[in-house]
Length: 407
Image (cartoon, rainbow, N blue to C red; front, side, top):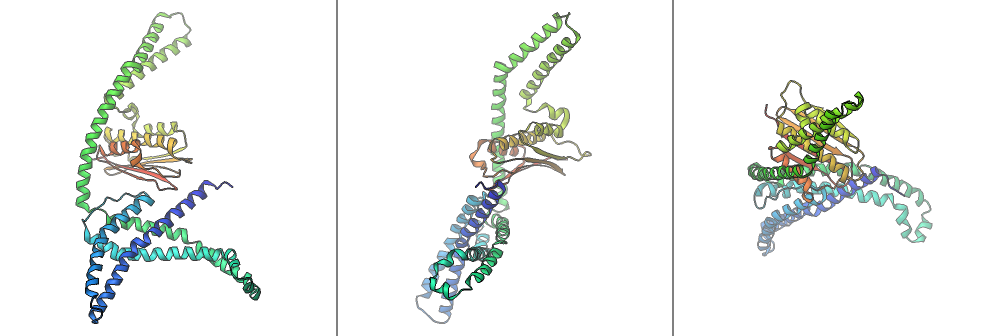
């Protein structure tokens, strides 16, 4: 029996969320166990108990201190492996926030994880009571002839307990994705330093990539496409000048073809000079994106909200937005499994041009494994923009780009 794609994606999300919560229980409650042992040892010392309690307490404290960075690395791996969220490793920096997360926030999250998974286990056990009740001796079933009705009630209670588990697990995962990166990642100054370094590297890479691309296009045009177009334009021009006895309709076709050839040469020259689509200069970003959406191999819903009273964004910013949408739609058509539609939203809020591309595929895209996504991120950073991508297993995939547009 074939499972519908929507049901399969829902099951994949539930499996991902429950796996994430189950793996978080030992990571979150380990520090709680150490604190509980330390509190017990302190109680023994205060009450004059075991003489070795101070030595054991010191060992427990050292173990707790060493556990903080280890648990941080484990949590970062957990977020990246199961949710695709990459949190930069802070190392031994921000020790107070890391300690607070593992000693207080982690204990609360661990308790909630135990409750959600406990509800899941209890619900599964109760809902399958008719399966495992046959493991009890047959004498018991004979003595308790009303067990079938009681088992029905237990099954209904189990199904009722299972009903809120997907929503609860999803809400708890969202809470953890909100708290984890804030408390375990680097602070603002480190983010700024890393951002400056990334921008310096990405801009240098963008300049090199643009120069290499320009030279490749110039070589290809000179050796092939440009010569063919020039030859075609010359032949059409000769035909237009020499064939005087043709019907007006035929001459109109030749003249139109000649003009098209010259326009194609001019457009290619524009691309060589600036790698900038001519349609952006002629009709603007909205029209350029409409053309992309119309040519896409899958249905695309396009929404462009650009305030008419504000000046247009810089040409470099519009070019980046255009190429991001073009590459994203191409990747969606080639690599987004089971995707049936895409949505592109372009809005401008003050000095920010925000571009969001989403599809309803099964997700699983990883920017670290594909040169195309890395190239997009590099192009966005070349104009001091930000690139974010969310593609958890089960979908959906969403690419969000914010480009600065100084007014």
